Image 1 (tube, one colour):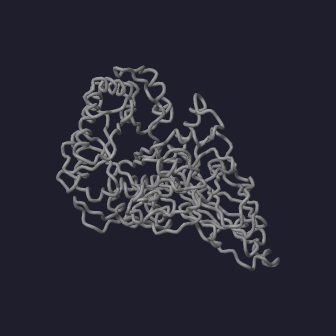
Image 2 (cartoon, one colour):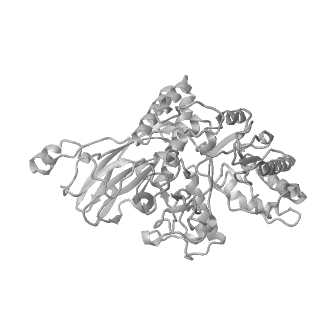
Image 3 (cartoon, helix red, strand yellow):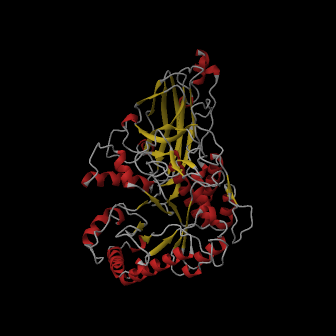
Length: 585
């Protein structure tokens, strides 16, 4: 939430400046601002474009739970290039100053707008370049934003904390008061499952030979990338750990466990979900009927024993065949899943098998034939968001049977009305996921690309995402294009923008921050639902954010939830949830 204060022309006179001294000094512009320059504040999940005119909000009010991240954007405008700095004024509370970070919101230029979004080309704000409080940033003649993010450590006492941001925008200076209200509740970690594909090859390419990507350097870089994503509620897959299997499927279990330990163990990064190392190309190329190979059973049994022996068994899942399109391919899934369950049973648990498909008790026509033969073998059903709302009855039945439900999205013909990761669309597209997932009992979110920094068509080579945000293109005759669809982060090494540390983690984006905000909102929904009468209350509040005005049925229907796009709608609903939780304590 951001409060509003209007600056007034009479502050420019000496006499009234004296009178205004009776007001809190932090509310006043400290120097007369030229007509073409301004400093103001917008919510974290709104966007300022190069030609956005000056606003009127000049103070910040944040509310946050324990272990939550909350931010706001300080926006500056000038008619000429100038030096800008944001620092903390004397007397600012250390809880805020020691747990805050500052980023410059950079623009990426969209040349080819994402297909079916009906949005224009132009400059869009997205990358969050790390900057230091108090340091000078040179900005061009345009509107620009600086992103202030505050983390509230878990266990912070409830109460109100205050600080003042001192902003210098060329010849203008302003003091912006900040109020942080810490709620008396929180969480140790976000509870939404996720699995986002992260390309280590793309990370290595982004370093441009500045440092060797092997040994300790590789470990440090991956730790930085993994840590940053986990802090946003995103679990990268697969972790950088592969066993070296011999011809009979056996491998050195101690060596593999040691490679996996930094990522999977509670004493390390503690990935909540870990994809086991089994792919169509690993530990060897999988041919038709490969599930019958004795060496594959040997291999999977040993992998599962490593997980069981180290207490990681509840994290493990397999994801082998993607989007089966025929009964034959679904039968292959059946054989793979049965083999995995046979292997994990020998290790003393049931390893989860994830399938990017939906349950169909009856045929829906075309390739969407009945697949009830999979119902006892798939542990995580992960349908496309595009199909989800025509499969709800069957998905609810699978969840009632104890299976997990995940989903994933991508840029398709419904891009204009479906949430996703496209740069041109409002940040509500990412934030609404937490709300939708809670309403529809979806346990996890899958994403097939997080740093696809290669050619938009093939994924190969190098495409500078700071210069070219077109991350995905379908072959002709379709030719669909998508900006940012598989690119939620930016390279952490980029000297052109002053990012000169090759060991640094990735640069975040407004979209990734909005996605985390949605995951955090989901924690509010879950905590509020546990209060007396909370389920009905939560349903009423959530309807302000997202709603589904259609009948639910199992069919090839493509009706999708509608959802709010304004930041204020999310913030008001979230505050209602927080007040409910506080009142129940």
